[in-house]
Image 1 (tube, helix red, strand yellow):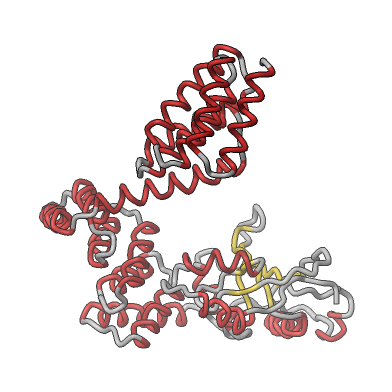
Image 2 (cartoon, rainbow, N blue to C red):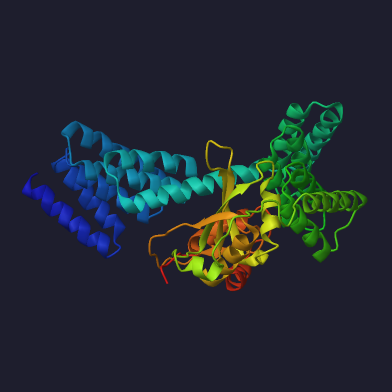
Length: 418
């Protein structure tokens, strides 16, 4: 690099800082004339064009800078700088695709953290622009009609494809999600159907179809508790149809059947035993109780309803239920709200002759939460915020509602030795 060329560059930089762009260009051109192999001179000249909003000339100068930089094996950061400026020029012209092209080329030379953030944001904007450009309610209606016709013919797989397209064309149309949910139930894709129902309810809580679909799914899966909560939501929102009334009647019948086959005492141990108060002093109680020797034909809903006879519904959570030994002994692991309630529950079990034991736990100060809608145990407030929008029972999620849910449903199940 000649001293004369450096002097011209410095004069150009001074003119650039004082916004005398014409003089800056003249000095940079002179520097290039004296030393045409220096990438910095081309980069500086491109910067002047960018400030003058001469974006086409800016890109051309950046391309020259990249070419010179490749030939002279210049610092990769200088090459990346030229590519990044070309991307900025295209972005100013509103050409996001070409801007991304140049930014990605720049990142291949040097991974600038700020440019990485910009690329992610631009990609997000481009994807959103493509989504919005794709929206066409008229075409969505046509796809919906095709889906309905195929659904009525029993071709559920093809019908779903048309519903998928309809949703893409008109994503704010709540009815489309309920149509697709009905189709998904026929394809036995229950979880996705429930998600579509939640989306439909979130967009328009007055449409009855998603409530009907959710009730049907929960009844078919024998998830009696979830079904019961859907009927409560319907009552709260004044949503009622003949189908919902029919499902409500079916739910009540299932609840009666469960109650009828849950005897208060089905196993009695006749041998002499010490009193519970003496017994409890021989062990260390915790908040986690494993009850064994249960009827293996029961479902989780039946276990839960049985436990509700001894512990308030809001005070316990079933962690697991499974076969506990090769002798077909089935059991259920229950988390109780606090140790005193766990002891009271154990007392009832002891008096009825059930086999049980307290499970030990490591000391922990971690706070847990129980969702007041689906009773899932959540391990932190952050996890609760992630759970809230996808809760299988309540479809509506707001920041205001989150704090209220935690306020009413939080309790310590950290299993400390206290």
